[in-house]
Length: 251
Ligand SMILES: *[C@@H]1O[C@H](CO)[C@@H](O)[C@H](O)[C@H]1NC(C)=O
Image (tube, rainbow, N blue to C red; front, top):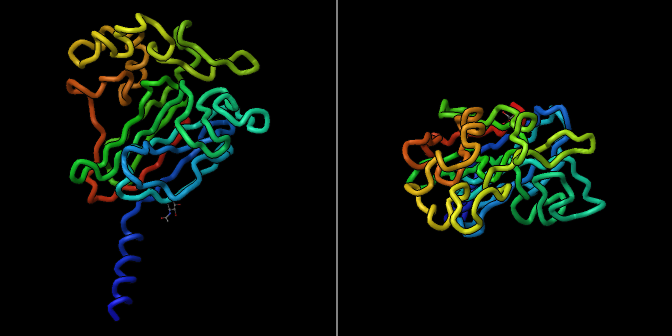
C-alpha cells in the first residue's frame, strides 16, 4: 500500500508539474524551430526533440516542466542538413547538431526566452532580438498575462549595415543587432554593453546604434543587453497559475 501511494503521488506530480507549450508556424514557408536550455540553469528540459521541421500553418505541442529555466525557442530559416550538419546548414539560426540542436542558434535569430517558476514563483518570458532578428514572433498564454512580441518583419527595412543574411533571390532573411554586426569599438562598445559600457548606467539606449528602429517597431521585446533595466517592461505570470504558452512565428 505504501509503495502504491508513493507511485500515485509521483504520477500526480509529474503530470501536474508541466505546462503545455505550443509552437505555431504562421509563416508562409517552412521553418525549423529548435529549443535549447542553458546547462547552468538546472536540469529541467522540454519533453520533445531539440529541433524539428515545421511546415507553414502547422502547430506542434509538447510539455515543458514547471521549472524550465534558461530555456529558449527560436526558428531556423532555409535549412539543408544533408549538405552541412552544422550552424551554417541554415541561412540563420543554425546550430551544432543538425536538425536536433546541441547548442544555441547562430545569430541573427529572434528568441523566445523562458524562466518558469523562477525566483520564488514567477514565470518570466520575453522576446529577445538582442542577438538580432530573423522572424516575427509572439508568446501568448492562456491566463491573461502580458504577451511579449516582435510582430513586425524587420528584415525588409533593416538598416543597410545590419541587413542580412540574404536568400538566393537576394531578399534579407535577417536583421543583425548593431552589436552582432560588429559596429563600434571592439573592447569598449556601447552597442554590446562591454568594457567601459559594461553597466546599465554606462550603456543607455541612446548609445545603441539603431535602437529606435528595433524598439520603435517592437516595443514589447528586448532589443539590447540592458533593455530590461530602468523600467523597461517585464512579462511575468504568477507561476501558480500554471500558464500554458504559445510561441507563434509570423503572428
Ligand atoms: C496543448 O495545447 C494545444 C493548443 O491549444 C491543444 O491542441 C492540445 O490539446 C494541448 N495538449 C494538452 C496535453 O493539453
